[in-house]
Length: 219
Image 1 (cartoon, rainbow, N blue to C red):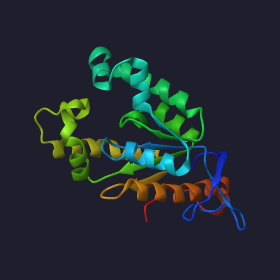
Image 2: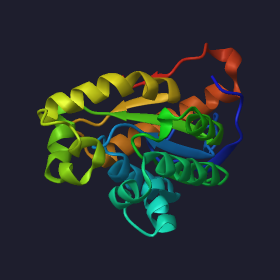
Image 3: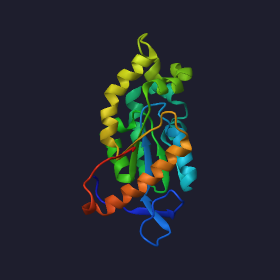
């Protein structure tokens, strides 16, 4: 568990955990960052979560495109992956200095240790998962526009996705505080679960002696 964080206080809805008896507010992390493979729901869940909390929604890929002046496939083609990753780190570190944000990251962002550390220091990191077949269903229509999926050497898309998940999942797990499955669930239901568990996680991080460190997984 990271060191104890400052928290934001938000109005508590029926399904938001309360900070204490008789208190009508709930303490949440300064930011909530969503990580995971493409097609895991980071953008749709991120927007739903930001609406629910009345926080800013920040899409780091969109920030990268705004700075680069082109979309990500064009940036890859023009400057290569190394330049893209360096710009991604710059954007992530800058965004992580803010608060009251739901931060949606690119699929490769937390694979760089510097990025994972910046996100963890900024607040709660949530790893969104989905079954491989669900990811394929969500991404196959635009697979050729995504460098990671387009360059698969003729391999079946499902097999390619399963191979990539096998490589990346352990690293996503290490970067995250909380793991939530998004398969066949609405963004609103997922957002509600994240808010509930974010409050519990914040309470635990402020009072670490009450319970041993652990990652909050879906129950």
